[in-house]
Image (cartoon, rainbow, N blue to C red):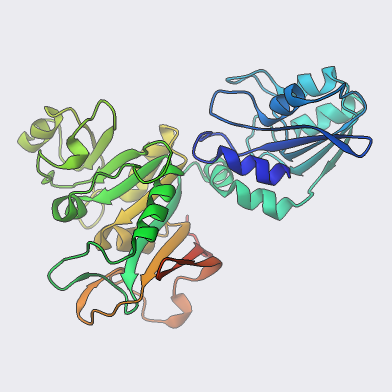
Length: 357
């Protein structure tokens, strides 16, 4: 039940983790709560506020180790001890160095029974973004693309709208709402002129990140409209004195200069490091093929969401380019988490099992 409650905060609590809590007394559920929004009460506090009777002597079930430090809210362990909870059952330990095992030790020192590791795998999977962000100091990267059955994301002439179904497009907007930022290359902006916003479902708009090494995107692009409402960052290798830099800066976009990689393009690892410093814990990459290939070849992807449409194009643009793999043993290995039908499409949701440093 706590796991189910925690999921209700998806898209609203980042960069904080998803957390759910349930209070049980004498075999009865007397309180429920979850972390609803960033900066708001944590799950434990909401469960205590929701309690229908005195919680003294009860058991608190919580998906993640309660916090013990002062952040946007006071430490949860203070409320747990103050309300005389007798037992705390924790799904998984918090990998945040400000918390990790410290709350458990404190609760035990106060005479509270603590049990950890209950449904730990499910609790870790629930917060895979949070744990990755805490442990690597990099955003959790999801690569998503729609392709035909024969692996094409566009025709030979570049037409790509729409390969997937309307149902899958709605799924894509849901995916956007669940991420802190969305990234595409300049080629996608020039060719498709996407808005990169959440419109088909309820949810927040992610920060838009455009990788444009040469600063070639047109000033009338949709990602450069309504910048006060929907923020856009353009990552480039150009310096502030460049005319193209000034052209886009004058439109109100934030332009950041990133060192070039060996190919003379924006170094994506350094871009991810910068985004992480801005508290971007999750990043959705929607293309194009050059960006997707670069992310995969540099082992920067964590999750791969592939929408497969029941269509065949034959000649066309591949979703993934040359990864310089000549030996099958070196192939990128995936662990498939879920396969679902989406209208007439199939969605394969998988994780990269070999992530480099």
